[in-house]
Amino acid sequence: MGGGLEDIGKFFNTIGKIFTAVIEVGRGVQEIFEGVLIEATTVPVGLVVGGLSASEFIQYVLAFALTNFYCAMKLGKNIFYCMGIYIGHSILTILYSLSFGSLFWLLGKFGADAKGLEQGMLGFADIIDRWCIDNIGIHIFHVSKENRQLCYNCKRLKPTIFIDKITEFGNDLNDPILDLLFGGINTMIGGFSRIANALSF
Image (cartoon, rainbow, N blue to C red; front, side, top):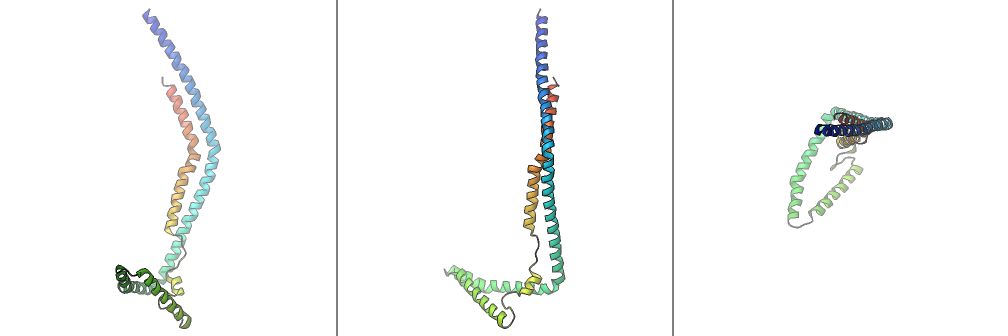
């Protein structure tokens, strides 16, 4: 008698598990279809967004490589001429720091408006330099425009902008591109896992 009741209990327990499994399989199939639908609607958008983002990134890579290569070639071509300007500029900067820079630092320690005095002196130097360029045709305190163009100025994509673009592209890949391309797959995997778990009783 006890065995009969136990068998009946096992039977109803098995029926309950089968009923639960059928419900879970149904939910799993629903999730699979939802994943397929998500993939069908979001993958094209992800491909377009990814293509545009990758295209823009490639443009920045090319701009960075080409502009920096051009500037390196320009500098290499003028290196011997510019080296004299760089050395002269460095020597003058050191001499200024040791003489006037030290003087203004010392005056500042004694409470004088060192910054104002320095700006006033540099303004006066600009006036003298402008008079010399207008009347004699040479700079005495500044690098000439021609030498600036030759040795200092070169239009190129700066590394900081390039790094920002790499970061932006990485963020775009993470969200939304990967979500658009693979969001439905995660839902489908969840559906298959639900079905596998339901059938493992």
